[in-house]
Length: 295
Image (cartoon, rainbow, N blue to C red; front, side, top):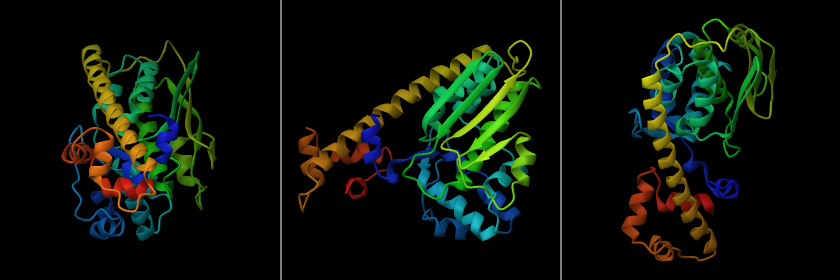
């Protein structure tokens, strides 16, 4: 999606894979935090939690749920502790592809290429130069209070990439786009590398030794099949985003109209009201919500 169109979208349009929420209830129980209270205070109460391989939920609501859980637990490193104590959680088609990549470089490139399927991140970049490699990404600027979300995502990506390294990969730097916690001891212990807090984007920098760090889980057939699936899923997401940007532009062009209706916008797009509403519903959006976001 063009960057200007993306900036016009509200946080209601930002998604993350439904499996990101899996395990939060379990960790809340470990921390003696009432999960139902977390759902209620984060606006997720009664929402459908689609944890299938292809399902997504609101990124804004998921990030908010982690912040609420952290506040109730009195832990400003809640997102990192979740990964440290219960692991990275269930995999989806992108992390499955990464698992079976031929080597560390392939895993890094697959992560960057398909990461947008898992979460609406921006500025994703993988760099490989000799023995130096890095992966960078940013959460959308429209989100607020994302310290726990940042810690959870960074620790999951780090854990999964280090697994592929097979002992031949070391983290040399972690740049984390969150404010520095009251104590950095947990981050220092987890990453075992220099850490820069308050970064403009999240970045993991690695040092690779040996002949390209072969992956102990390598499976060329599975990797090829999963990459093909992820390419198709990425195309589907891009088409959906292009459609939302088109609807947003149509709303924006007539935003001053006091009684703008779904029928008005549908006529502009040469489609029926029902068809417009159905296509928005496929992305868990409504005309009213999109209109409010643009307004």
